[in-house]
Length: 171
Image (tube, rainbow, N blue to C red; front, side, top):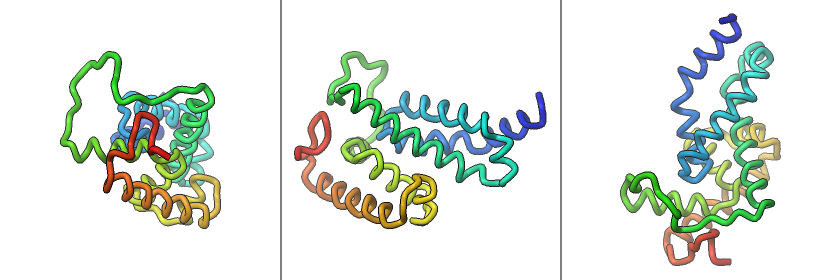
């Protein structure tokens, strides 16, 4: 293994679990999609690793790759016309977790990909608006707008869960 590989493997060992948690939030709780997102992110990061390592910005760069990939994935799914449903045709295992967790996952799934990315980076990763704007390639004002709309929609949906259907909020 080269020195580049050693550095990359050390980074993945140190941050892998955190990356998977962030990905799971960005994919609204879909474990398989989260694993795919982490894989895609790490593939892209490995290619750019010498540049990333040189600037000592590994976390910010990898977070940016992940959030942009999650948003792109959502856009591609919408273009193909995929529709999320409440029932899974075949399930490998029973849901694990309390009802509250399921409600939060459903509400996260109802948000737009950008809103979800902003809220995950803000409240889970505890990033500033400027850092989120940098990761998403937008202005801090756009981050504020997505955060405000996302939180408002989450509050509304958690107050009245009947507003959720298979494809998101009934609007």
